[in-house]
Amino acid sequence: MQRVQEAGAGVAAGGGAVVEMVRGMGVRARGAARGLAGVSGAAKNAALNAMADLIWEKRGWLMEENGKDVAAAEGEGLAGPLVARLKLPEKKVEAMARGLREIALQVDPVGQTIEAYDRPNGLRVEKRRVPIGVVAIIFESRPNVTADAAGICLKSGNACILRGGKEALHSNKAIAQIVREAVKGAGGGIPEDAVQLVETTDRAAVGALATGGGAEGLIDLIIPRGGEGLIRSVVEQATIPVIKHYKGVCHVYIDKGADADMAVKIAVSAKVDGVALCNTEECLLVHKEMAGKVLPRIAAAFREKKVEMRADQWSLGLLQDAKLAKESDWGMEFLDYVIAIRQVGSIDEAIEHIARYGSQHTDAIVTNDLAAAKKFVTEVDSASVLVNASTRFADGGEYGLGAEIGISTDKLHARGPMGAADLCTYKYIVTGNGQIRA
Image (cartoon, rainbow, N blue to C red; front, side):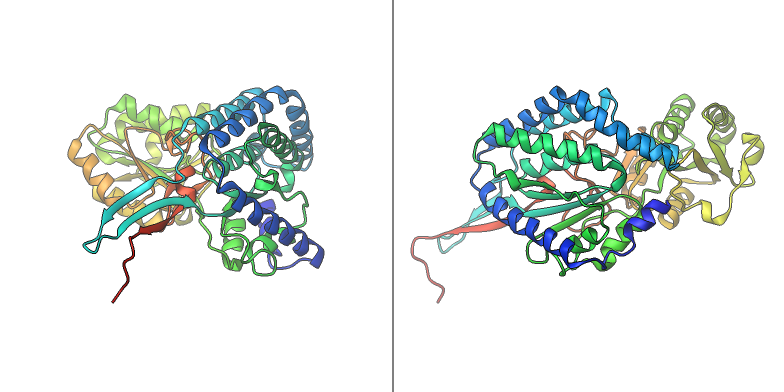
């Protein structure tokens, strides 16, 4: 967490050299965005497949570069879950390549007609999807974001400037080099500067990307991905539109109409299958009529996985070795092997708890009661609401987006996992035959 806070510190500070470097990248990205406007969907797909092929072909070198980052992180005592996010074993490299190929298979969002109609005066009005332009992504720890972001931005016709954390510098540089090499080799008129990586570890680069001191007027959108400290620092300083989520305080609610076996499976998996990710379950809510049926089984599984349980006083006896929860535990994003557990007397109490302590990210209900499921999905105001499924599915790849550029808890423009279509805006195309407005 300290690393996250340091990454956000000094966002507005920095020397002129870094500002000029970022501004130069912005100028080149703006030119590349104009060049991308005329690139065909087939050319973009060819480049995406070339990126996937080259990442897989050079996986040995990529994993060696990643090993340097992992060794440094372990030497500095970075927390285990964060080191796990940093690692790129072969299966993750394969997933990166597969994600790029899945993006290539998707329908090209650029140029799609959202709606079209004729006016009484004969004007033809068309609302057409177009790229945003230049997108900057600031992220931490997870080097696969470099490939995901480059792929989604390319598919949506946007130039991108990527700035990863210093803990993944070797990995990010290797991936960016492979991506640019593949784009150049694929041809099709795609500008090489459509994908650029900020290679300096100077924190002033973050401020230069986010504020008028560097790239205002050149960058159209900034997306911070990382800890709450970094995201808040970017938002507070930004003079450029930002899409973000601060944290993922995700809940699983086991309703009185739940299947006990299903409830245990989902509640355990949603916590332990990726504890350092924003879609992991941080709080388990259990209807009091189900508590005795599921909590002892869930507790046994959590003990096996070394998950620390912090529970309300009514649940302590069913969990055996849980700690009494503090008020601050209910809205906490632990990102670790820790979970808050609370019994509720009704679905209304569960929904009220989520409204008070949640982060509008992802929440799930386990129930066989159709009315309860309908009530939950209607009244829980989160970007993703799941029924009888783990919160861990709140992910671009799992939603069929190939990969994601991030998860938004905002309500304007984009919400939830963001794919290529979410990196588009729209313009109105109006065609006439000589009409004038009297």
